[in-house]
Structures are given as structure tokens and as C-alpha cells.
Amino acid sequence: MYPTDLTDSQWQVIKDLLADQRKRKHELRNVFNALFYVVKGGIPW
Image 1 (cartoon, rainbow, N blue to C red):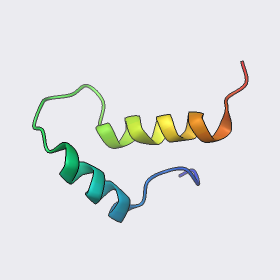
Image 2 (spheres, rainbow, N blue to C red):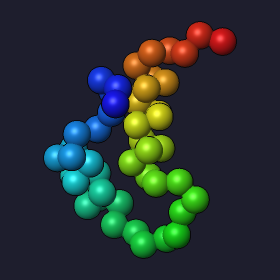
Image 3 (cartoon, rainbow, N blue to C red):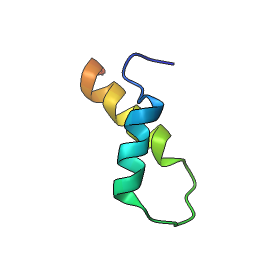
């Protein structure tokens, strides 16, 4: 777990806002965690 990962309470708020039931290859929580990690760290190339 990284410091930028969403807590359970933060995820509940976001999940309720999205509220769609599409089948996905990757869990949305993991996608959001990855985005926050890249935004926070800058990920040098």
C-alpha cells in the first residue's frame, strides 16, 4: 500500500459518485490509486 492509495472511506465517496455496473478488466479503485501515484510522484521517465 502506498501513501497515495485511497482509504476505504475515500473510496466509498468516489464509488457512490460513479455508480455504474459495467464489467471492467481492472478495478476502478486500482486505476484511481495508480493515477494518484503518478500525479503525486511525477514518475520520472
